[in-house]
Length: 327
Image 1: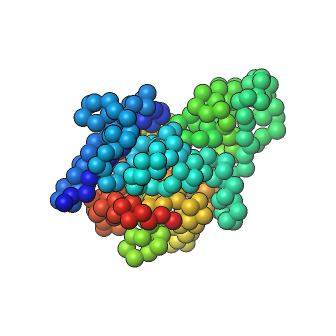
Image 2: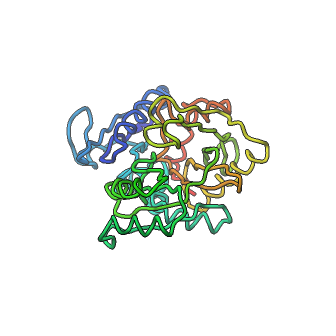
Image 3: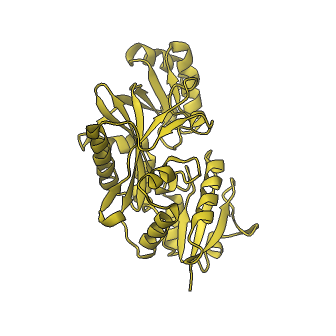
């Protein structure tokens, strides 16, 4: 009898469209001889659907052996969906609710990673509730914080709401943009350098935590950094594997494994880094739910670069979830 895999996609976040595409890729790539794939769509309003029929989560998940979660952003990555799946006792891919919430918060993640001895950018966090005057806040920040800086929401992924600020006039709009996404935002020094991303998979090829080859990312010049627009403009240049020295490659892979394990992440994750003149800086980690699976996404390309098929990786993860194996 085939294992029924419910592929959860969509969701209420700003990454809705990407999640739909990621889910479509998973539905297509799952091994048809082993798995019966069920498309479970969650609308922007949070309503669950199967075959176009709205229904409660417990009904949508009836008969599902494993839930494959590709709900990017809020709801899918932050622990909310994980708690629903725990409540109905359906095994699911990715990290548990606690680790998901931890990884979704950029400041909490930085606190954990910095204790590992890994470099992180200097930054400050602002709370919207205690920021009465955005204009004055921008003025104070520009006088006291080194620029260029990057302003971004403290939660979320895909660089949604992030802006690189080079002058005072750009700072206030950047604060408003980030606050529109999250009530807490980060202002960090902008560390120039080459951007790299490294995927990690649990129990792959006989290793406890297997690091994929680093991918080098070169965004279009007009974007300046790997912004949301750059990621989905079709113009981003990716080198798989990247143009790294042996020492850089080894250090990137080592740090990605360290982050994955220290954060308590499960099944797979992807960590982003900057290779600067001062060394390698950690940027952020995407737990499994936030890792893109579209045909343009970095993770599937990295899987192919080590000679593995996407269908084999998906089968590996489904079996990890089915066995209840978590870090």
